[in-house]
Image (cartoon, rainbow, N blue to C red; front, side):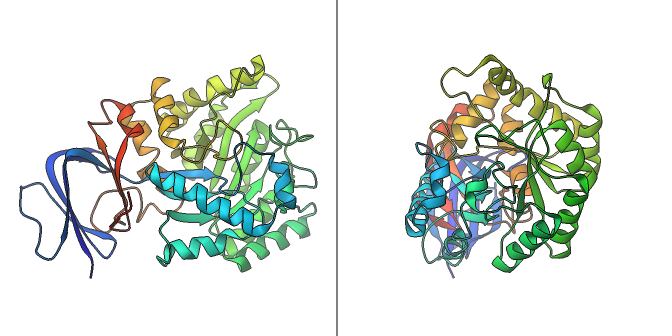
Length: 388
């Protein structure tokens, strides 16, 4: 039995701040107790003294692409050697872990090679973050992300693609419900599939015990997803011919149905065209409006898609969101407890509480008061082991 006791000046438990001194105790990778009485650690426990630092749950990046090289051309993934892709994914996962990101949801890599890496991490064969995978997103021929290998055009092909993902042991089914901005010839203003197909996809996945999250920019595509009953919507831009404009009726329906949102904080790269800049400027305000409406929102990165999206970018993105109006509490919850809920692991990730996985990070100061503290992670504990 491995026991770890961590002493700290205080902690943010994923929801609230707890003043210290605090003592967090874990056994075999799970948190078993939190003490604020100044008690001594139990005998036979390894002691980690972080008495000048603040503890937080390990960060959760709910939308990443581990095998993508931020400096590369994603369409070249179609032709790359599998071992090279896997080695790159390991490297990127290590970069994320060093930045304090202890849980990653990969929503689009080529093929299903990441399943082996996920099991290596889960079984402790190598040190790494908790990894959740979708395999290649389901998309149309030459549709957004087609080069990852998930092409399915007809309804029968879509159902077969869901069945394949179930056989392959994915954690999530990802579908490209609309076009995207980064695949040549793909139109973000248009749905990729009709409502009948989306309903069938969701029914098929749910019958196999799999949740569905969908890439969607176009408001018309989001409307179909709400009608189809998906579990999550990625980006959720509400893109129309008038730009990105929230639809209050759809937002209310998302909240009522418990449809979660993975809002990717796509900070601008270079000097974008004015219409793109307008969309980017609305991302954080829209996230705040979704939160206020009761939608569970994860702030996440889309890491890997371009040079502005390295795999350790989440802390900087959280500062970006706070600088644009979200509170420290909103930002931190959206990258810990709420992000874990969005990923379907909220019962064991994203909180510092008994029964939760002992994934923790330590920073100087109180990030609720100064979110920039999250940029200087001083220690990382993964499954009860100090890994940085």
